[in-house]
Image 1: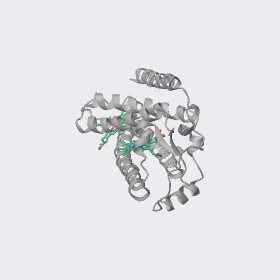
Image 2 (image 1 turned 60 degrees about the vertical axis):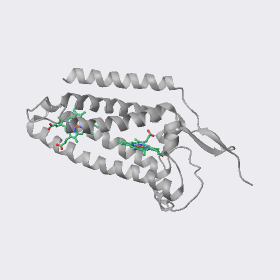
Image 3 (image 1 turned 90 degrees about the vertical axis):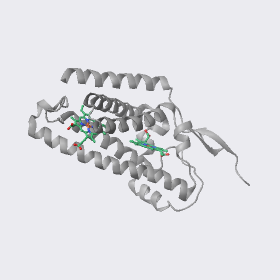
Image 4 (image 1 turned 180 degrees about the vertical axis):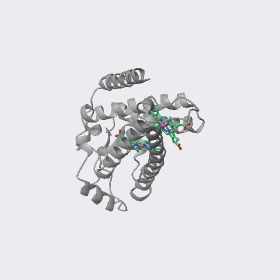
Length: 222
Ligand code: HEM
Ligand code: HEM
């Protein structure tokens, strides 16, 4: 007998908004560098930092599917999950799968490294330097600049792998992961318990505190 499938909310609005805002801001960071709009480059970088701080806190106090403790599983399980990639099976995942969970942490850490190296980077006197550059001297700042450029190349590769994985899940397994990241909902067997969602007002407070902390930090060091 076919089981009844009902829409279940698996992603809260804050996590979805975080994701699509991050996509836009990382693109803006690249665009503003490409156009040498330094001031806007810094601003979009600071916004990425505020989002990252928000996501770390939300990963501890947020809804079930946003929590690190819920989606970080044994790395062996992640490998086993990837070895099933070619199998067509029903999508019963409530939140990130074992492999996706680790991908989230890698992306967050790489973006944090990007922002940190940016703070120490300089513009060879063409424009304003990163606010922490003057504390480390020109030679070290140049070194941070190399790391900033190299890490961005790696970030592009990881994003390519991230998007390719999503396309592969669709083509090989028939799982549409993008729709739930937009609507928050996924059709699941009716008997499955829904994840617990935390009120979005708490997310707004966390985001406001994160943005305030970044603004204060920039003010203090600039
Ligand atoms: C700058 C580009 C991107 C970055 C930095 C990025 C980053 C991330 C991060 C950090 C997460 C984890 C979300 C969370 O738990 O907070 C995630 C999940 C996800 N992303 Fe992206 N992403 C990018 C582009 C895209 C694009 C273009 C798509 C659409 C094709 C996409 C689709 C998804 C989906 C569907 C998930 C949820 C995966 C799952 O079900 O486990 N991402 N992404
Ligand atoms: C996710 C955030 C960021 C991304 C994706 C990003 C990306 C980039 C890229 C691709 C470059 C060019 C590297 C090269 O080829 O030499 C660059 C340059 C630079 N970035 Fe960032 N960046 C980010 C955040 C920041 C932040 C927060 C700051 C400082 C507040 C910053 C300061 C700089 C500086 C000073 C340069 C050198 C510009 C020049 O030489 O004209 N970046 N960034």
